[in-house]
Length: 380
Image (tube, rainbow, N blue to C red; front, side, top):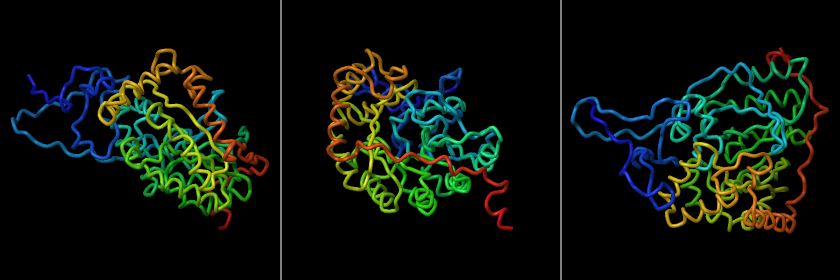
């Protein structure tokens, strides 16, 4: 029989996330330095659980630290359409699959299961770039059947995560959208968005772009634990200031709010963002769909075991006793007394700070299909 090496630090008996114990699938800390997820258990479409097996040599060896790997994908289609009444847009594009920021609360983690990968550490380390996406996007915008409406970028994984510096897929897509004079709404917590101020300021002057910056906490230590490879809170406030100074409409997104962990910072985050130049604000409650819930409970057990039970009790209180309620109209905010209190606090603070104004409506009347080959082809 093969010699099995358990993929965990130490097995524990308490329920994960409830009494300070990690699940039996946790990976050794030294191997996952700089990562938020504690495990890499199989996705829901894999038939067997992942178990490391030795090669037969009875030699203790340290496993290598998990490194980020990026593979390329050629998309047949790039624009994704949705009909969700919870979302203010009906189409989006995502230059990358997976996200190196590694935010433990990310609701997009389960999408990695469709690739046969784990929503845990695979989501943070096994990324997929789509370098041919700009060409596919241009082709879709040129289709005679295409009807223009704002495109959202960053609604699934961050378009300005670290790998964008090397691959540049997001910038290339923005160049296509600028040429087409197509409206776009961007969501990010990455400072790399400032690299593209030349494009964004140009589009903003035509009423074609707005940006949302995600701010989850003002505590840099907590941020480093929850979202280990994302910019620190102070850096995100600097991004808000730079965008506002460049004339780009910018909204602060206090999302997600985590009960009994970050909710007490709501007013302070809004005040900091308003002071940095944000013109609007929004909020979403913590969401724990599918594989995200056990990953988040493991994170609580490791980093804030004294508050784990209280946090999860609040989550269940807002979702009818469950850890997640996927119903439209409920999943973003939850329901019950606690959710109503958070909503009211946000309304009062946003009004006081002038952040309750709607963002400028993006223009659709300037759209022109991009030329085959892009703007450079027109200049030849």
